[in-house]
Length: 132
Image (spheres, rainbow, N blue to C red):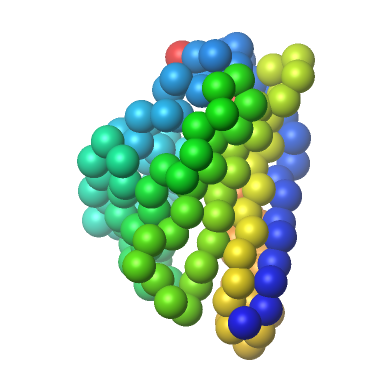
C-alpha cells in the first residue's frame, strides 16, 4: 500500500464555524458536499453513510471524531483496498479546507490521485458556499 495525503484549496465560508460544524456533524447533510453528477445510491444514518462514486467502488464512511469549532474527521468502514480519512478543517476567520489521506495500491494511486484532488476541491468549494 502507498500512503497519500491531499489538501484542498482553502476557502472563506459564508457561515461561521459553529454553524458549519453543527450542520456537517449531521450525516444527512454530507450529501451537500458531494458532486451530484458523480454520486449514486446515497444512503445515510446519523453515524454513517454509503454511496457510490461513478467508476469507483461503493464507499461506506462514518464519523470518527468531532472537535468543535476545529475539525470533523470521517473514515472508511469495511474497505480493504482503499482506506482513507477525510478531515473537514474549520480554520480561523471562517476559512475551511478538506484533507484526504490514506493508503491504497500504488498502481491505483497513480490513476486515482487527480480525481480525488478534484473531489476534495469540489467539497471545499461547496462547504464554503453553504449558507446555514
